[in-house]
Figure 1 (tube, one colour):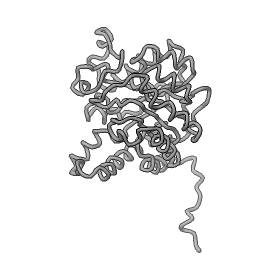
Figure 2 (cartoon, helix red, strand yellow):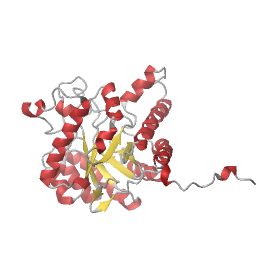
Figure 3 (cartoon, one colour):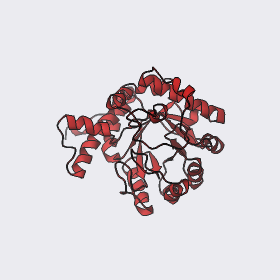
Figure 4 (tube, one colour):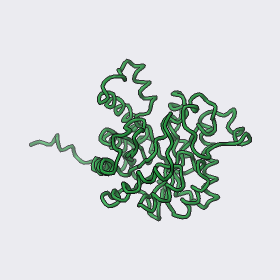
Length: 321
């Protein structure tokens, strides 16, 4: 079993962990504004844990295509009080979804355990230092918008701070498959982490599903989730309500432009299918919007994967009365 540590604690990855999303933002792609504000966000976080989340991911800035960046101070103001209160009310690790070192530092002081950096430590040169000094865990995401800045799927995303590559760096990615590019990006990000003193067991890898990828590329990376484990790292995957799910269901004849509640049910059913796929392949953490929809899928998938350790109890419903 692969180990993941944070603040000198160890995450129990014997079974797949469902990580619930709390977007403290007015404009996130799926639930922007729904949990915006202190009370809404805290109540949502508590609800997700009650529904089975074994981890929470708090975000204070939307990174969807076309989103408007906010200052680090505004981002920190949105999340710090929420993290402090959740730390009092839940017993699961909390990650902060940010690429800004000031937000990361403030969030850790507020009680966050893990930094979820969608730039793989490239958006802010001080981020790796903050993580190393605090011994927080970190999630390094593969971000194709950085190594394919002119790709049509990348152009619609905002620029994440200093996350740019020079011509020499970009050459390393040319002529490679999307799987090879992902592994190259991880190699580069891990090198930054290692130079700062971040140990291997404090790192998770995220394939970056939905970030500057075509539908085919999203599917290709999901089909090769085994690559995340190739070098012994823990894996973190976020596929919940991604646009390619809409696209696939729409092509199959489902109405993805109807009532919001009905569309979300379809998205969550598609997301749950990916939960089964990921859990069956031993992915340690899955980031989802709807814990209630994904948790049963994860339980069943884990049970099948771990069948040899099942206690083999009788099915009580079939016992003679």
